[in-house]
Image 1 (tube, one colour):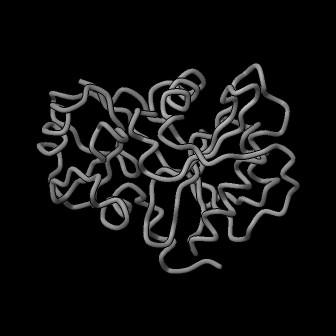
Image 2 (cartoon, rainbow, N blue to C red; image 1 turned 120 degrees about the horizontal axis):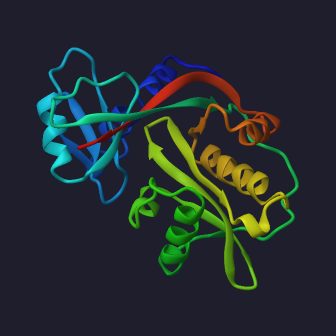
Length: 226
């Protein structure tokens, strides 16, 4: 069921750091960032002079993202790249067979989780990212081969993230099962799952659509460097 609160998804970092993830925020007033140890993302509300605050944050980390509207930057920083993503949302639990054992990852899995995600999708996932939500995995011969978890969290929405399978284990349906499991666990928290996927990642988009996700909007991740 769509609600007025869906509009918060237009500015997911800002509202996550204003709601469930306040404790992870570096808050400059008009712009809020995740502490860079957890997630290199920021968001802002329009009408604020934010360039000075973004400069301050850049003292903590060399490479980061603003999610949503295009930010104004000082001449100390450059807009390196715009990643255009589809923001997708699902409104009902996913009813598929789960054939492989899925475990909830704990502290003992942090290193394996960090290494797997950065092997497949380098640059986004920090060692402490796993502390932002629940992460789930599939093990084969005691090796973590596929994962999915929760990243940004608002009062009503949780982002599904880090949908990663080791290339040696792809094509076995692990991602489908893990996304379904993560989505259904989010619904058990009385929240609505959503996710972001690069707009030309057709394989992933088709998978999410088969599972019941629909495209809500396009949203930009602006990569900023010094």
